[in-house]
Length: 279
Image 1 (tube, one colour):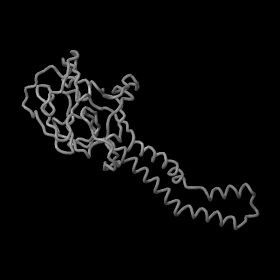
Image 2: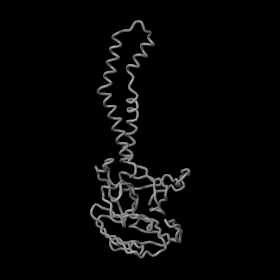
Image 3: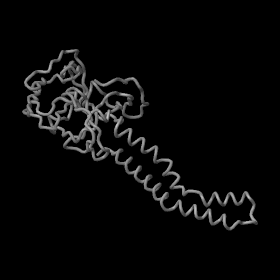
């Protein structure tokens, strides 16, 4: 499972807030009382400097409370921003090549598909619904980690994928050949083809390995209500809805909108060579 930063942030915000609250309700009164008691004693034999130092020590907040009060507003702002505005993700696999590369850092719009509570994912405000062709971050039904794929099928759609050709509700999705390419695959580099596909007005590139796949597999699906059919742009090297099924609406994380940083795997410095708005 990927580290759940939202959960970590929620725990830290709650912990800092609880420490601050307990100090305000219990400990702070004790410090104020200690200062008042000291002043009543009127220590005449001590210099003004010593008195001020001792008063300062009595009024001093514990280090844990100081840190909690300092970090609470910062962590709260970060939590709100990541939960309801934008959140960064890194692309770990090549399933979205050529649109996104391994090592791309993307920004995900968290409010495009409705505002959701962090961690639990409960939608608290309707804003919009995923549209065909958009790239979405989500949690798949078979694994508790973040995936990023393109929305192919909406609730109620009939999807067919046969002989490397995509059909939605019986209509073949238009595409045009761009060029021959070499595709990195688990078995090495294989000859392939780059196409430009049109998904209801969303123009994007896809790539295919130039090998006819004669294996018997499922080729058609009906998308259930509140579910979405997802596919990678690297069509012959993507584990997606063709393998593990559709994605429920409650598992949506957000809409990918831009690549803002790229870092090649291994000991390489990050760069901005692949920065782009995502289509």
